[in-house]
Image 1: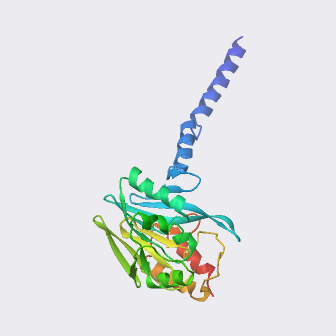
Image 2: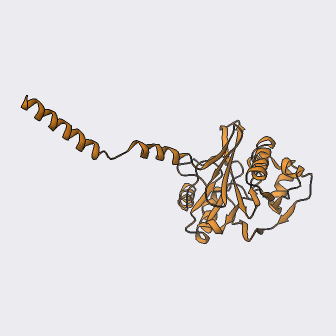
Image 3: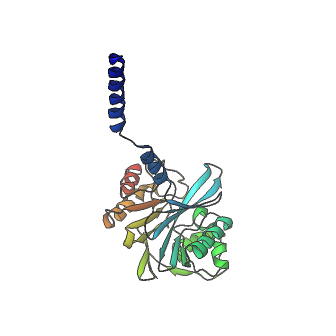
Length: 261
């Protein structure tokens, strides 16, 4: 009898020690699972919105293509003091309406400008929706000329600029800037210095991405163009590519190496 009690006591002690040293609590696992998706603040079949910093959001819509199937396309939304600027429209009017409604009703903010980063459909597919709501379009002369060449017209006047643009957004500023050719001859980037964020559009590739669509590309200049961006913004904390997962300045290095001659 004494032996039985002693064995039971020893087993109980081992079980107690084992539980005490358990490295992961169930609540910890649950918290980690929650953190994984905590960036997503809006999601439908047409549009996903993720909050990446206090002022910067990624909007993700979808484009059906012949060569790549259904492709997720990124844009950037910057909000400050109830004012917003959108870099690249969602891919169509339906998803663009959702984005405008989200900003208007959920964020209680007004979109004061849309900036396409180049002339491809994944940047301007929803432009009509923004025009119908009298949201001004800021566009480079290069992009406007290329859109006209591809029979894309505007129903409202646009605000043209050459290679640099500054827009006041509350008490902060957003910038658009041209650094050279790459994915297209007109590709620009968006910058919000307050959150150290850059929207690279299709000029910047996600990590492990392929070269993608090169139909209008200048592969000989691509790396050099991105080197100029890296020189000016060497420690960017948020870098959003045109497609796929965002990251930091390492996306510059990956893109430079991908197109190195």
